[in-house]
Length: 199
View (cartoon, rainbow, N blue to C red):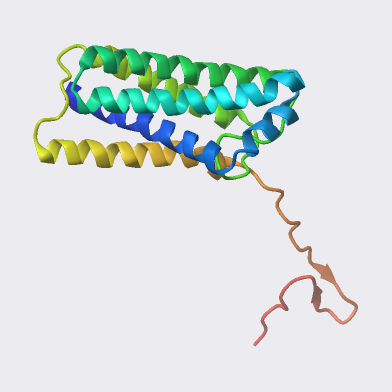
């Protein structure tokens, strides 16, 4: 059971890194624009911070994947601990931005997701998963040996990663259109809704 938990947590974290890095590479202007809108960093530091975040995600994802494929537990644990620190920094930054009354887009995906508490919670979830995996991997939680166990871990990781990644988008509350009101006309019919059914 410990092996499956560690494998799923590692898979979720790796998929999150890949998704984040891919989003930043395919939309290179999104993250700098979001950081500028937040107004937390000086204007000169925005391009450097955006490039550093993308580079960190790519390098940590590559390092963790290489360690996983080589079954090098110490290297994998170190990479996962660094990933936990990265996501914790994301969570703290987003929380600070919201606490100071600032807003704007998240800049963390291809979708236009507003910065919110769901972004903070997702970052903490990824950080805790990475930390948990880093603590479990050096112990008895060896990578799955059988193809069935590996497939189960991969499918579970994909499902959890997809749910966590899509959560802020799904929970964003767009402005709802006003509901039509019913007003009586002089002839007894209703304006703004369906006519009442009569026999």
